[in-house]
Each structure stands twice: as structure tokens, then as C-alpha cells.
Amino acid sequence: MTVTRKLRMGMVGGGPGAFIGPVHRMAAELDGKIELVAGAFSQSPERSREAGESFRIDPHRAYADYREMIEVERKRSDAIDFVVIATPNYLHLPVATAALDAGFAVVSDKPATATYEEALVLEKAVAKAGLPYALTHTYAGYALVREARAICATGQLGRIRKVAVEYLQGWLSQPLEKTGQKQAAWRADPALNGPGGCIGDIGVHAFHLLEYVTGLDVTSMNATLRTVVPGRRLDDDCSAFLRLENGASGVLMASQVAAGEGNGLRLRVYGEAGSIDWRQEDPNHLRVKWMDGPEEIRHAAGGYLSEDARAVTRLPGGHPEGYIEAFAVLYREFADAMIAWRAGQSNPLPETLPGIRAGVRGMRFIERVIESSRTESWVKF
Ligand code: NAD
Image 1 (cartoon, rainbow, N blue to C red):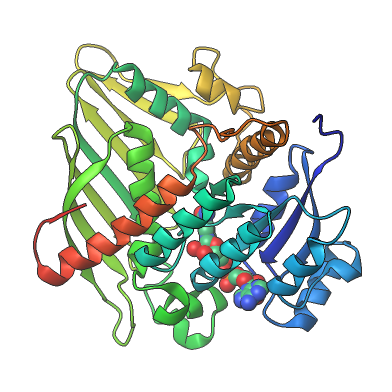
Image 2 (cartoon, rainbow, N blue to C red):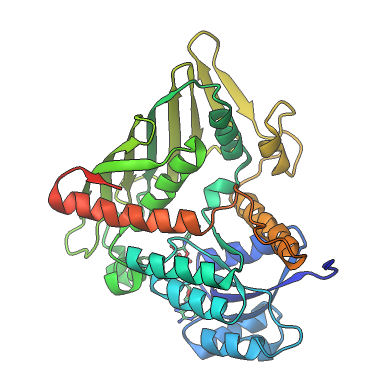
């Protein structure tokens, strides 16, 4: 089947004042392949309606609740094609399974679920439904992350020996959750967030980036979680030693009490012959250092970049691309996969697009870090 129209998206979450919902909307629509037509944007029916109005969608399709959205949409001849989940974590599993059961594909924000047990339930639901499922680990959409991944895959660095990944933020250095700040409030509540605080919010991104770029699985870890801000109910700081499947060692640092830091995600990979260094706050440059050659700084849009990096570049060199464009790369890959799936391809999701495997591994990682910290010991993955 040739798709001659835009794919129709129904969003859960992303109402007034939300952080990531608006990013999803901008990113999904950037390439002109997807349009927002419906949503249950808030737990408040009134705010969901208001949001629908501000997004200029049909007022009848701004629903009071995600269950209502799924029930009503499945009966429409112009129904949504997929559901986007941009809510606090505890809703990821119920919304995803309700959507999949009704025959809708899913794009979910991370972490895939609130707990590892839930991730196993989701994995089964995705397999049973046979529908596309994508997970928005944003950083996988940057051209120079794709370049770093391609460098590792070609073996140019030689055997990978050491990986250092850090994700440092400072915004939770004070008990912000006690002020009613929306994003901090649910993240500090185990019932809404799940058991991993900083480790579940940003540690999971760092873990994903490490595995995504190196192509190596983490096999064991020894981690320490701390709650630095008094009275906080979940961890806000993590240090972990990792072992990778090829015997390499890794260090992962994640903190939300690193005062002064913004969104300090950085990955360094060291092989026998050289190393790479990428920072999210300078995403259009990738540093590559060789044992026996000068340091290179690769620029986004360079004609010399790998095919994978060039495939996700939109602008000529020197025109910076950033967070929204990276997010949009994931949506573009998802849209293309949806079109292929509708045309009968059974497994259309590209390897470059994080999916259910990444979701389950991320939740396992959070669970294992908590266990390692609790037992003060190395644990197998
Ligand atoms: P947020 O608090 O800003 O937004 C959550 C939204 O969900 C709000 O609009 C809220 O009204 C809505 N909501 C809550 N309960 C609902 C319900 N029952 N029905 C419909 N809507 C409901 O949170 P956020 O920071 O945008 O985070 C949302 C999700 O996105 C989290 O899972 C978080 O981990 C993830 N996230 C991912 C990234 C990334 O880099 N990919 C960045 C930030 C957040």
C-alpha cells in the first residue's frame, strides 16, 4: 500500500507546561510525514481540551482520558495510526499495552516502563501485537552519534578497551520537588516514577548511548546510588563500574546534583588504536584521537562522514542542528518504518532506531544498578 497522506498521531501527555511533549510534537512534524490529530494531553480533562484547542486539532479529538482516546479512535475511519507516550513513567506500560491491544503502533518516551517486571510484560505485548514500537532515546538521533557508532562498527579503533560515559545535571541540587515544580514532583515520587531516580531518568540514557555506540552489551556492574538532597525519596547520584561483553571496562557517572551542569552527557570510547569523544552540549563536533596521528575534529555535515551520519543530516556544514532535529530523526525513521510495515514488511524497524530491546535492557540496567548498590557488590546483568 502506498501512503499518500500523513501518518496520524495521537498523543498521551504533553499538556500545558510539559517538557518533552512539545518536543515530540515539533520533532514528529518536522519532516512533514506525521501530523498530530488527537490526544489525551493531561490527567485533567479540562486541560486536555485546552491543549487540543491550542494545537488546533478537532475539539472532539482532545480526549479526557487515554482509554477514551483509544476506544473512540479505533472506531473512526480516519483513526490515528500510532500513539505517542509522553507522560510520567508509571503510565508508560498501561498506555502502551492499551494502544497495542487496540492495534495502534507506539512511540514511547524512556524509560520504557516504571519497573523491569513491567518491561517484560511490555516485551510480550509488543511481540504479540506485531506492531512497530519505538523508544525515544533522543541522543541516538544525532548525526555524530551515528558517526561514532559507525567508527566503532568498522573496527577502526581496534579492540575497545575502556568506555567512560557521564550524564551530569544540576537542576535537582535543591529539593525542587518540594516547591511543586511539575517535572521534579513526579520524578521524586516512586509511585509515579519507578524505583530508579537519577539512574532511571538520565542514567538510562547514558547506558543506552554506551551500548548503542559501541555495539557492546554490558555484562556486569558494581554501582553506588546515593540520595544527596535530604528528604528526597529516590537516588539523585550514581557511580558505576561496568564490564562489557568483550572484556572492556566502563565507568558510568550520572548525577542530578552536579550543581552548575546543564545537560552534560558525554561519551568517550578508547580502543587499541584510538578514541572518540562526543558531548551532547557540543553535538556537531566529534573528536577522534589516534595513537599515531593528529587529533581530528569531525564536523556534522562533513562530506567525509559515514553514510549513517550523512543519512540523518539535514543542513549544510556550519548550520548547527540540535536536540529537536535529533529527536526528529527518530520520528522520520519511525514514519518510514510504519509505511514499510503497512506495505507488508514484517520487521521494518531499522537497527538505528531504539526499540523494545533497548527498552528492556534499559529497565534491566536500572534494576541491576539498584541491586548492586543495595548489596554493595558486583552483579551480573
Ligand atoms: P512533564 O511533567 O513535563 O509532562 C508530563 C505530562 O503528562 C504532563 O502534561 C501531564 O499533564 C501529563 N499527564 C500526566 N498524567 C496523565 C494522564 N493520566 N493522561 C494524560 N496525560 C497525563 O514530564 P516530562 O519531563 O515531559 O517527562 C515525560 C516523560 O518523558 C517521562 O517518561 C520522561 O522520562 C521522558 N523524558 C524523556 C526525555 C528524552 O530525552 N527523551 C526528556 C525528558 C523527559
